[in-house]
Length: 198
Image 1 (cartoon, helix red, strand yellow):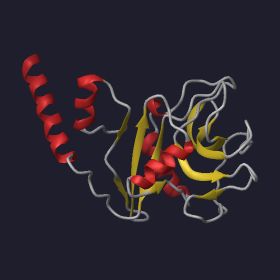
Image 2 (image 1 turned 120 degrees about the horizontal axis):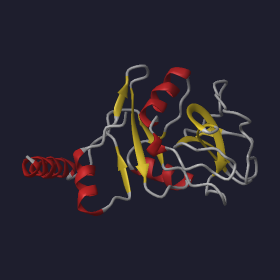
Image 3 (image 1 turned 60 degrees about the vertical axis):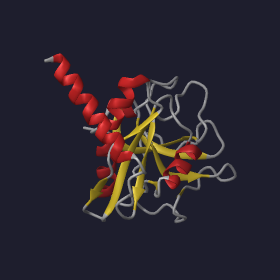
């Protein structure tokens, strides 16, 4: 289950949120850290990729079944999956795998490597539905699942944009300036709410 920091809870209490992330977690299998980011209203693949780089990492690039399972566990929550589309399916968060419009079936990782032999595509995937440049998400049809699917990087009519993405860091990420203060303020606000209820 996704754990939300108290700074997010404070933001929600004070009037809405555009995006939120859980704390980065260490995957002991490869020594990398992963952070799930939820985005209200959805986000395009290119914006998610840029945000991951700005945070000091890149979109997650699962290379093995174990790594893929670890990443999926961070987002195995209904809030990270879209409403049902016109094709009667749901779409999960973006991953660091994509193709260009000129070669939509030629997928590669954001790290520059070609997609290797590990590629757990979901039902009838990849299908390059909608055409153009494709991004890869968690996709298993009408259920949440750790398999992958592709979709147009900027979205298609009848489909909601993915509601998040996962950042991968090669080492422990450095907290943003002021995040400790937000955490303290969030904790204080929540403590105040608890006192008022009692």
